[in-house]
Length: 464
Image (tube, helix red, strand yellow):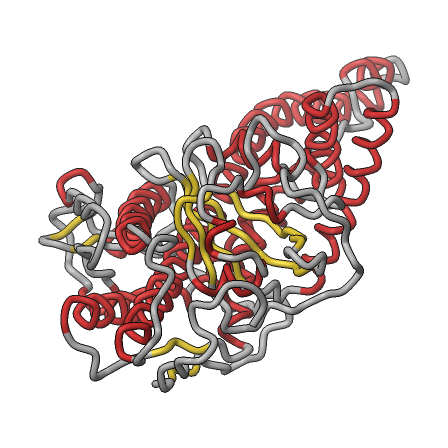
């Protein structure tokens, strides 16, 4: 993330050209205040950024900004998250030692006005390459504007406009359509490659209870994660149908004027002229209905995209919450190991807050999607009076944080459309499974009970 007022990193350094990879199981996060100042993070972020905990805490998040990243990307991010929406993007970061590392990042506004950023290893290489290419073009636009006397803010606005134009040139409506495709693809591909879900079955106390709660939630989310392929197929079908209808509405060669000219050819074509005039009248009526249908299909495709993004985001937040709880458990169990207590202060509360709010938002999007016609049958997305398909319902989340930090308020079931006695009904649309990002059919996530990390190396600042 980048401070909305600062366009360049405050800890300027040059890239060395060295690259270090983010591991498949490296889930890391940070939270910032409204100005982009880091307020908490996990140990994975410390390790990959290669800054010390002391330097990261209260530093602007642009401390890890790579100079190749265009200001327009961050301008687009801030415009989105300050309006209360989620933003997802590919980012190239610069570590303290000048090495670089690529991540896929999601930034989520929290109810207290802060922001949660979760990062993973980019696993959809084609999407990553596309994003970096777009950024390269935007960076050139910005550099040219700066040499011509533009301010950094003005250059960033030009860069953001270039990104939007380029995305549209790829056949997408806007940047939101790109992120609605990228986030579900990244989450699905990460699991297909064998990303692990660490467990500590013998953990006790508040942390052990929270870990089991998050694990149970993830089991429920898993059924909906698998349905993302069906939602993607539905979105693709809607897009294809919209293109066909738009093509059918292309300007016709037959016009009222040409029919009138035909009438002068003689009485032998008068019958044909009458039929053509009738066809033109019908075409006008049909065109109005088709125009409306094309608009409705576009709205439905956007609804499907937002639904898929919310499912993927909820799964990602559950995974990073699980990972951080395990980090805290291991730091308690291993003698001499101390988690970055100050840097992680209140982090569990913020993670569970994001998870709760995400489930509630997912339920809201599900209800809207069902209302727009995305369900197989009216009974598939029941309201308060409908059937309770408990096997496919995601349990209402009430997670209380352990350790420092305020407890987030549980989502109010009465305020969430579609809730049943403690859990929302989620309803993806129908469709045929279609693997994203070169997926491996039949691959499943490995769940492992890893031994705690040895005492040496944990909690130390700098590279590991």
